[in-house]
Length: 103
Image (cartoon, rainbow, N blue to C red; front, side, top):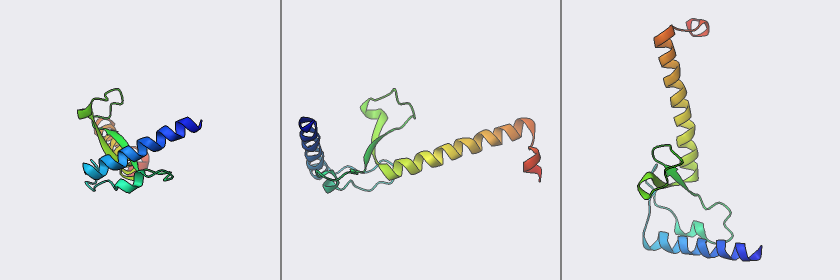
């Protein structure tokens, strides 16, 4: 198991070096990633990949973008809320308001 942690720490070091040499910004908020967030021992690196087309089967470089974890959570929370609002608006358009929406 120690072998796996050593590899993970080397990967974190490489990511930190890469973020320092080639500054990368969050696709959602536009802020640069902090290269020091990748240091070994930092439990929350704050980085994830966002699928631009919301299709997890597409993993090509032009279909994914690096984002902060917090930005990603917020984006998808608001996206799900937005999709629900669209579905509600379409239902009202098709069937009219529900009893609770008329009150």
